[in-house]
Image (cartoon, rainbow over all chains, first blue to last red; front, side):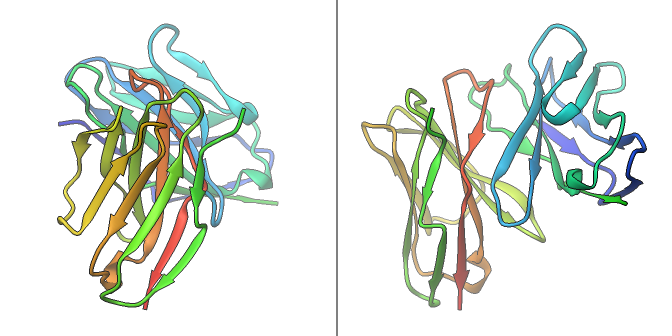
Length: 115
Length: 112
């Protein structure tokens, strides 16, 4: 069965510093991987995805993520954090080789960027 | 293009009542998935509909049901509401293939 883990409930970073939000996954084959962000009382906003191709994926608002098959990871990164990046971040995985499986989410990581 | 529309945005219901939530997907998207978000359990998959057929179902009691109409709009229904059903309910629309999911703003259900 597919699963995804976000090992950190909370990440704190100073404004202007680089940020990393970690995600590891477990699927039987090559995964589809996604990152979403959620602001208070809002839905999920798409940031980026990995389907196939280049392991480094660039997304919205300066975010990027690297697909690492050997480490089964898909960490979200940004070179310089902004206070407005403070939000709840979700990693999600789907196994396209297991039929019509749903998108499965991690527990989420709360990012706090301090001015 | 218009995004995913969920109505209503907020609901307050009493224990034992039933509730119906609506989701209108992006035009051309035939798949609609529903998720329940709570602080303790995170985002949990409820069910997915594709071309009016339930294609997948999560581990929720039978009180939770859904349907999809020919125009791809979907509804979910929760009967005999319990306090624990209080949550943010999110729907996502996607094209077939599961390579993209666009979420609505959600419906915040409070059961008192």
